[in-house]
Structure formats: C-alpha cells, structure tokens
Image (cartoon, rainbow, N blue to C red; front, side):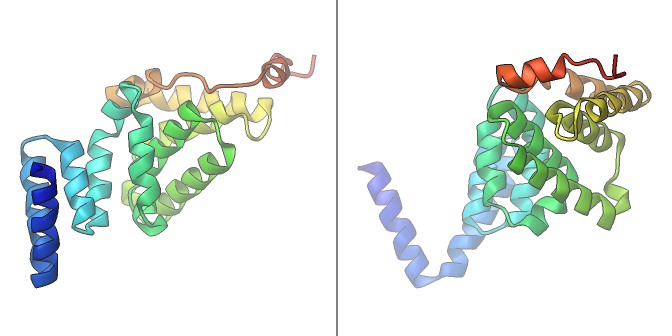
Length: 196
C-alpha cells in the first residue's frame, strides 16, 4: 500500500508542477551521492532527466560494479544514455565495453563503446589518462577482433601502459577476466603469432 501511495503522490506532483518533481529527484540524487549511496543516486538522477549526472555517477562506481560481477547493472544504465553523453565520459564508455566483454562478448556492442571512448578522447584530450588508455587497449586485446597478432600487440601495449601508470591501472586490469569464447575461437587463438 505504501508504494501505491508514493506513486499516487508522484503522479499528483507531476500534474501540478512537473519541474518540482525533477527538482526533488535532482536533490535526492545529490543527497544520496553525498552519502555515497551511488546506485540509488543514479536512479534519482535518471528520474530527474539528468543524463550528465547519471554518467558522472556511473564513472564513480563502474569498478565496484564490475568487480562485484554486476556489470549488467552498469550496462543497463549506460545503454539508456545518449551517445554524446557516453562519449563525453571515455572512462564510462571503456567500462561499458569491458562489461559487455565479460557479460556477453558481443563484439558489435564492444566496438560501439570503444568508438564512443575514442570519440570522447579525441574531442577532449584532457580526458585521456593512463587508466582509460590502458583499459581501452586491454579491451581491444581481449576482443581478438583484428586477429591474434594484433591482439598480442595490444596486450603488450596494455602491459607497457600498466607498468608505467598509476596503481589503479594495474588493479583495473587485474579484474578483467577473459571473455567467453567458443571452442572454435579457442583453437584459433592457439595459433602461434610469429607464423611458425
């Protein structure tokens, strides 16, 4: 009954003053964020129509979500955001690519998120940081999208970046499990890269 009354109150407020409902949701999101209740804050930011705030919050919590095996929650929210918002947060686009890699292995969606990250990094070079760069190269290596030889080169580049980057880069790389692959993919990846 309590949920029914809450829904009724929200509907009445929206009818009387829709801007008030958005302000309340925005304030709730900010209050929850200040208390580190970030998943709840995301829901209120979304209800307020604050896509940029949703993206900021998801950047803050993407690693805990992926580490806890809850990448689907991250993906559910990221998929709702417009591409320009996702590309404005390259770390979020990279996190979504990794979450897809872990969850379903859909190379089409992984490519989409990697393109959005590249677009954001190109538009705002200040957003290029060792973490985003390392995880992007690592995600490309794990995709094995451009062949085994390129995946090995990408993997080596990811190691170089991780070794020279901050601790968070190494810890982020360690939480990325290998993608789900079919037996055919596994057999293909056993082929030696040097051609022998």
